[in-house]
Amino acid sequence: MMCDIFAISAGYNYTPQKYLPLFAEKSRHNINGWGIGFFREDQAFVEKSDEQVFSNQQVHESFQRLARVIDSRIIISHVNCPKSGSRHLSHKHPLMLSFLDHTWLFAQVGIVEGIENYETVQEPRLEISVYTARIFEYLRDQLIIAHDRNPYISLFAALRLGIKNLLSEYPGYFAFFLVNESVLFAFYNFRSLSILKKSEKMGDVLLITSIRKGLSQNNWQTIVPEDPSKGKLMVIAGPDVLYAADV
Amino acid sequence: MCDLFALSANRDYSAPKSLPIFAEQAGKNLDGWGIGYFRNHHAYVEKSAKGIFVAGRLHDSFQRLARVVKSRIIICHVRLRTSGLIDECHAHPFVLEFGGYEWIFAHNGKAPAIESYKSSGIPMKEAVSDSARAFEFLRDHLTQHFQHSSDVASIFNALSCCISEMIVRYPGKYNFFLSNGQILFVFTNHRQFMLLKASKKLEGALLITTVEKGLSDEKWLRLAKSTSRGGMLLAISGTDIIVRQPL
Image (cartoon, rainbow over all chains, first blue to last red):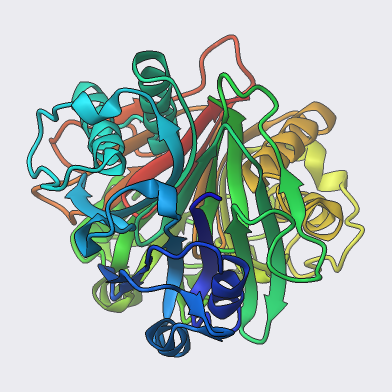
C-alpha cells in the first residue's frame, strides 16, 4: 500500500466535484488522512484531515464538500498510506512554501534515502520532521540557487538541475507535484502516472494521478519512466503538457 | 523593420509606462500598430493603419489604450510594411481560433517565401502578407497536434517541430509572439529580443521587446539565436521563463 497523488489543471477555474471523489474512492486503502491544495485569486490554500478519505462506502464528508466548492485552475490532492509515518495533521501534504514570487504547493509519494538529515539554508523552514518537507526545502533551495546565479534561467531547467542534484545526493524512488498558481510540474522515477485530457463544458482539463489505470473507464494514458535512474519531468500549463524531458 | 513588445504577468496588468516608450522607440514604424490582449479567455485586438508616432506625438487611441488595456498577456506590434498593403487588416496582431484556444500572433521579420503557402484550413483572406501565411502555417500544423497527438504530447515540442519545418520549407526572418492566453511563446531567428523582469522604472511584469536597447536604462537581457542554431523558442508563463530551447 502506498500514498497517492492526484492533480487537475485547467485553463479556467475548475470545480473538481466529479474527479476528487473518484480519487478518494480509488485511494480507499490509504487510511491516514488526506489533503487538498488549490488557489484562489493566486493565493494558495490547503485543507487537510487526519481522518480516512473513504470509509463505510462513503467519501469523507468534508472532502466531498470541498470537491463541490473549490474553484481553481490547479488543484492537487494527496492521500496518506499507513507507511508514511506520523498521523499528525501538519505532516499531511500538500505542503506550502513561498519563494521566487510564488506560493508553491508540494505533494509527494515514494522514498528518498537519507533526506531527513538535510538542513536548509533558506528561510522559512518547514518546522515538521517528515522527509517530504526536507525534499520540498531541498528543491526550493536548488531553485533559489539557480535563480541567484541566473535570474533568467527557465524554471524547467532550474528544477531539472535541482532534481538531478537531489537524486545524486539522496537517491530515491518517488513522484511529486510542485505547483504554483500558473503551472504544474510533475516528476516521477518510479511507479507510473496516469494522465487524461478531458473535455468539459467550460473547456478541457488535464487530470494526472499515481493511481494505476486512472480514475475512470476513460482512456487514461499510462506513462512510465523510461530510465528510472533519472526519471522524467513534465510541466503542465492549463489542460496541456507544455514540455517533458528526462532528468 | 517592424517592432514587437509583450508584457506577461501573473495577474491582469496594464502597461501605461512601457507601451508609450515602446511606441516612441519604434517611432520609425509608420504603417500601423496593434495591441492584443485577453479577457475571460477571449482574445481581443485593437489596431490601426495609422502611424503610431507622428510629428512628435503618440497616436491618441494608442495612448488611451495603453492606460486601459488590462490582461495577463499584452502583445503590441508596430509596423513598417515589408509585405502586404497598408491597412487595418494587415496590421498585427492577428487572432485565430484553434485547439480549444483563441491565439494572438504578431510577427516581425521578412519571409517572402511563405507568401505562397496555401492553408489547409480557413485562410485569412483579408490579409495578404508573409505574417498572415506564417500564422496560418502554425495554426494548420498545431491543429494536427491537438487533433492527433496523445494527451502527453508536449505542445512546446509540437510548436518547435512546426517552426523548424516552416523555416526549412519557407526560409526567412521570423521573430514572433504567439499566445493562447496561458503561455506566451516567443521565437527568434534574427535580430534579438530584449527581456526585463521586475523593472523598477516600468511595470514589474516580464517585459520583452525587439527594440535593441530595451525600453529603460535598466539591465535588459539580450536573447538571440546562437550562430550555429536555427532559432530560439521560449515559453513564458506569468513572469517566468518556463522553457527555453534552441532549435
